[in-house]
Amino acid sequence: MAIQARTAAHLDEVIFLPCRRSPHKPESPLANADQRIEMIRLATKTISWTEVSCWEINRIPPSYSWTAAEHFHDSFPQAELFWILGNDQWDAIHTWHKPTRLAELLTFIVFPRGKKPIKKNGFRSLFINATHPASSSETRDRLTRHKSTSSLLARDVAAYAEEHQIYAPKLLAQ
Image (cartoon, rainbow, N blue to C red):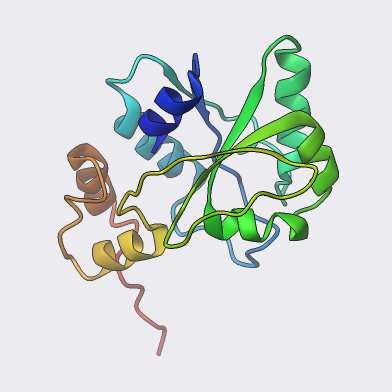
């Protein structure tokens, strides 16, 4: 998706920004911060125009997108900033913390994720007419059940997750 977004929006760089814990998810991610960063690094190691930022991972949760947007706006004041997301999150953008602040700082690159995105008043957006089989829930489920993830993950990422048993089923204490 980053490749398609870069091409469509003529992006110079794509920064991957894993969050420590989403305010929309009460539980912590199954993979710890170091594991998530390493998986992104493995996935992007051959792509020169990508970077992995630990800025949000190193903050006290929850992670709010507007704070990240402000951070990058302050860090790169001359840059036009974009935020890549799926249509499911685009549909829920009004539930995010300070959506009007996000609208001031960002242009959203939206992938369909099953249905056509709709423009929103006050938000700059670019809709990508492309699909990708990626689904974090499906990927975690496949890893848990030891099913193939070849269409979803880079081989090195799948091997890392398997080696570290990140998504292995947890045994319940008796």
